[in-house]
Length: 130
Image (tube, rainbow, N blue to C red; front, side, top):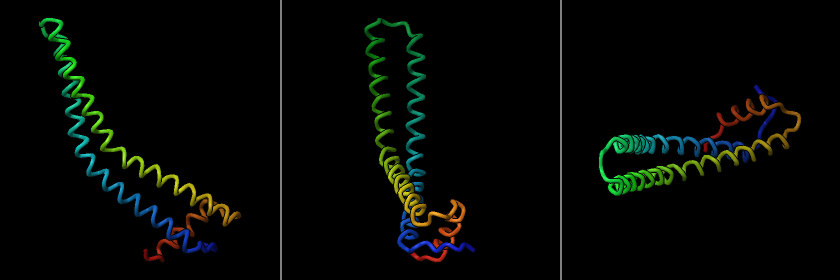
């Protein structure tokens, strides 16, 4: 049992960060399915590019086909980035929040070690209903 009692406002903030992190993690698991499909499509483009090298056709047609492949590739990459970007931003925000909370706790309890703070916070999290 820790001899540090962390104030409720900090415990509530820690709980908020944890719950938001869990929510973002679950959402990214769903997005991963879509990203796997996009990944397979991108690998198909790679194969298309490889097969284009070996095709015997006029250079103009090769250029057109290459342009089409690269356009579709770019659309897919942009789609993947747009799909994951909000979650990365949320995770970055949560990371900042956790660093701010850590700084506050270190300032509020200057003699406490990281382990003592972690133990006290875990104990407080177990007692709070938010």
